[in-house]
Length: 558
Ligand code: ATP
Ligand code: MG
Image (cartoon, rainbow, N blue to C red; front, side, top):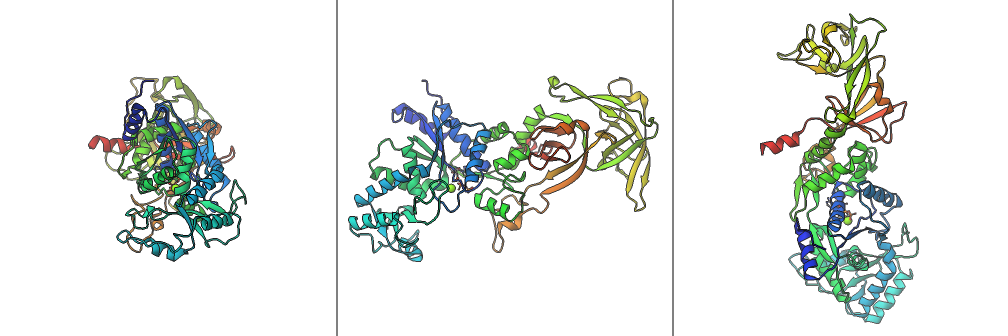
């Protein structure tokens, strides 16, 4: 095979390994811990692992990193499988679990004990920390460090047999308590945890630590390049130490990249869980959440998320990505593909005084001006209509091109109307606008017809369908909610107005909307039917993204 040219530093390493013969194939993995739903940061990692392997004709495994029984649940496993598939990636029959390897990991642990490279320690909580030292000070050897191999082996076996309480003993690697890298100071390998595991049940009461389980799981699966985020850089020497000390051949190469940070967004699963538990949001798949399932419910397509991942690329230094880039990716796609429809979010009634009562006229409108093949549809125009209340002003500024008493506007696809008078209720609220239409002005029918500056959307009052329409803003009111000063916590930055609900009037074609079908509501943005709360009797639409493109503008300026 001709080796494709590398287009980032990860691919450079891969190409060099293929060229030197160190590797004859590429095998990556995506290793989520099933302790929450996946977010857009994980999408970056999924995209990277799957597309990198595919580029070099390789394979990618899905491995659940399920070594902490306390926080992991089957619900999370299922959601992760769904999300990865939905994003468009397939791990074929290579779905693995770190828990599948508990037997092998236990065997490797005993090997290390037998080699004198691991021992059972009895230090507890605070003492463990004290003995570890600090970044500037070497640690001290544990008093149990030189206990005989047979004694450690015996204690380890009894730990496994369930003879001891949690915390009484733990297994640690014997490396160097003065090592400048704190991760190398005799790190823990196994601890006692009397918890049921979602897959292995009560088979085990000792569980391996991540740093021990991860490199060995990679090795067991034949992973060639273990791609992970930067915070694991300082763990790489330990990753290598376990594999080298055990004398394992064909060791996987760990490669770190910068995790995705998005402005106005919080990405840690622990914090997302807090938002769910405290009911700040409606669940993991709330359309405001940065989770894959939230983005999906919001109206994002898999291809728009893949496009986003492609555009952000990979780097070795942390940075913050502007959330507008994510909006840009879905907007571009929907601009090309979404059907245009008319909807009114804050309706006021318009009565066409010179239109015959009970008479309706079919108006033909294009489904998508960017796509002729999308065809057209017919909607009915009549005497009573709804328009957006913001399209009328009692005291309009100069150059206001929409409605005011005496003002004219074109109703999209239909006629030009002139506002004649305003009717108010006893509280002074506008009840309805009385207008007249110009019969000569029908759209497309008369090239010499009056030209007006403004065109607005409308729906026929007798045909309109009611719907709940949800508008969203950032879940956090500041660009970087992790950046707290003294006395502040990240929850202080939660935006109290991140969701606004409208009782809208929609054109009748939207009655047939199916979950996740996406529309452009003219002048209002892109919307999709909510997959959870909507029913044929009570339609619910989510705004995916607004029409205005701040990202494109930023790009042009810079
Ligand atoms: P979080 O910190 O959000 O709780 P995590 O890193 O603990 O996430 P894991 O389930 O361990 O979550 O992550 C699985 C994989 O996804 C890991 O390889 C991790 O490096 C990667 N990953 C997690 N968050 C991001 C991110 N923001 N950007 C890129 N990759 C990420
Ligand atoms: Mg993690």
